[in-house]
Image (cartoon, helix red, strand yellow):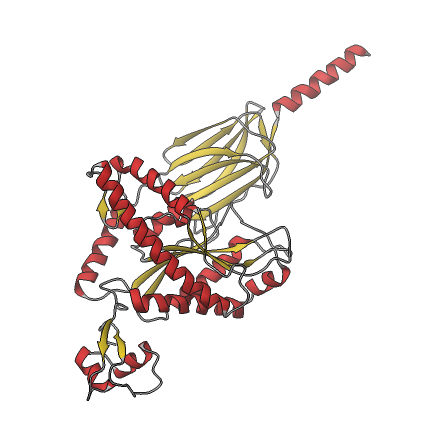
Length: 434
């Protein structure tokens, strides 16, 4: 009897060891410039990756692993991944093959459990660097800027995404989904405005590293970076929106990082590379750039917060500061808007309302209008000149002088009619067929 029991225990232990890890699910997140494949595993798993050609495929060998789920297949929009298949190897191991559409680079890492997921093995697929494409875009922008006034570029970053869902509302709404809807609404609202152009940093449900979000904004030569989020707190009664800028402490730590990397710098500070500057000059240039960007960020944040006060209650009545990574660009004014507390049932419902999303978008745009009316970047359509009304001048004669329309003068200055008075100062919008 003891012999039989011992054999049974040995068999059980061997079976447990030989299939120690269970692949419970495979999820695919396709981004414009990468694809993330996530294996939900019962525990950390030993694995190897290799690339095979003719045709291209990434092979993932997982030791002492098994899967009994139907494999998730990528969508047609995926730029890199064509199909996923698997097979058992050596009776104990699992081989997963990612059939590719083209050559890819890849990397893998494992993540510990969090409040949303258990153990995970992550495989990232990404293509060649897109530096040549970026250079072409930048050259086109420079030629355009040389020939005519350009739009003010505003980068909109919908927080979280893909593997990172963010906070979760009482009815199950994920922050990543609702902030993407709000960002898209804001994108459409901005693009209806003369002289403004919005660009989306994240366009779908996929993960994007925080510093890559800044890089995307810089690639588009953004004049302003706005990150959209929805706050959460354990007390569901907490409510209201907030606006954040980078803290001085966060700015200091970021300055140290940039200066440490300056000898390999491909990054620019206000268009000036740090790689050929001595330490003192590089530090001064960075400090000047950060100071100017932070001052602009605070001014914009105050105006946006004022606009949000007209939509509903705010959680903090003054602009807050924190060390958010997405606010750390030294050369782009950046703000983070916590639109509401998704953990509050009433605010969760409002965040899902298209009417409320439109109100929030209009409030943010109103704040942007106020700032850019006074501080539009030079060479943009919104960069205005000041004109003091002299005796005998009318709105019509001023419009003719600056080659703009009377309607644009009226709208730009918020005038209800054509009446102006001697000594009054009005702003002249940039002339470009207005």
